[in-house]
Image 1 (cartoon, helix red, strand yellow):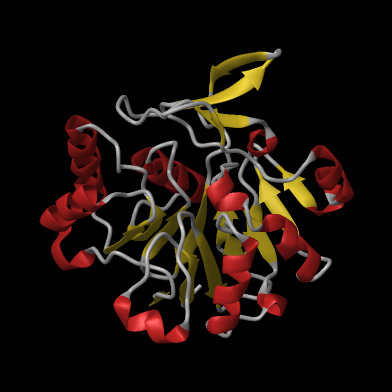
Image 2: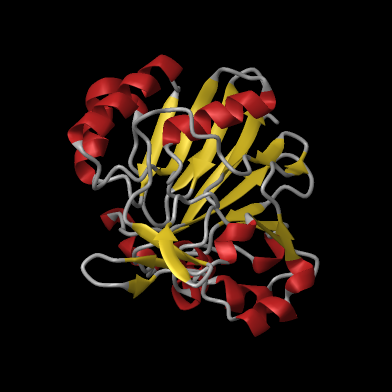
Length: 283
């Protein structure tokens, strides 16, 4: 594809210049992708609130009719909370692509045990079962647009921690097998990788995208990189490997964290642009 447009519909913060639009911000992420290919308008995640998501869509002039596919990057509430109401309003042929583990119970134990998982009840999932495409592997969504599917873990330093799920009626560590990203092939420029949180690790995710497409060049990285609470050595190793990737642009947001973004700017300069609710990226 030659062109792609990303609109940040839901993110943790607002740019002061956008306040006149009446946008709302809350912890979570939802990004709308539009391309020059047919049937390739994709909503990546739905934020944690349908009320805020739908409000921001209206404020930004984004029609629900545009959406062809919904991709869930993983099963946490701040990426799936807006899904149920959205399903009631989008076209009936809109499918939701997700890893099967995204629907499993999910918890975190800090500062206390909290449910942080998929918001739909089993009966609601059953009611919309024909809309779900549950796949561990990559899904080709449109020409030049695909999901990574389950991300192979190849680095030694990118390991999810602090998350739990239930297996055989017991709490076990959740290694976030459901984490995935969206990949675009841009003619003559390389790949654009859109992550929700990159719980699998942004470097692992990029390597997965390169492996799936056979393309080494990375033009843009967009989304949450989940470095906010990472140790210095993890941030150091991540940036060291990203320098080797040499992306043309990095558009971090959500769970990336202020300090890691500052570190990215030290390494990449003006190629790093932090994005917020209401921002539009055209590449």
